[in-house]
Length: 212
Image (cartoon, rainbow, N blue to C red; front, side, top):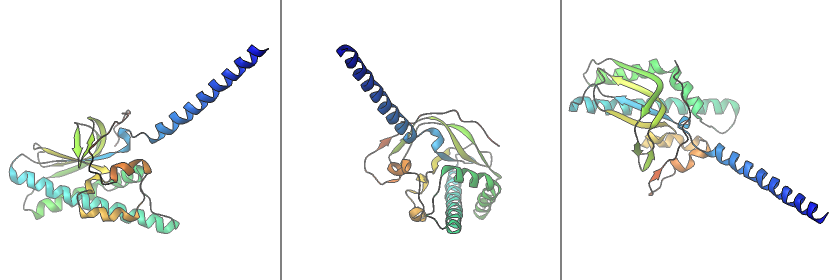
């Protein structure tokens, strides 16, 4: 009888430990960042000629400003209607970009013409393989990510990468003031907080599908 009670206690402790472990695993899985938690920005220059590379950066700056101005205005507008704190998530960002691809092409085209060139430009959303990259001390592993891909002219020059969501592209610009009133998911907090210590992300890679 005494042995049976002891066995029951051991079984109970094992079940309790298993329950606690399951809760811990689920919590950490929910907080774990994956490649699907990001939208990258990819701008490809017409060529490696100096003037084409400079043009690429001017187009980049114009697109970042246009995208983030539009996103913040839309987010604040939705919050005003619902009388709640403005928040922004990756799905909102994806939908905004997909709806505005033609407009983003127009923005880029206007910049190119203003700079004295007549290159065509295309903007599309899709999954691309991106090599290991470091932005302002944050290192992203190589892998497949969803990205806004902008190609200028023949698109044979060196490309430029950044992270569009969360808005890491804005870390080194004044445009990050736009996000002071907008809430982002807590899982991105460590990435957006200023830090002198370099970070190397360990992402869980999931299958990404191309979409129209």
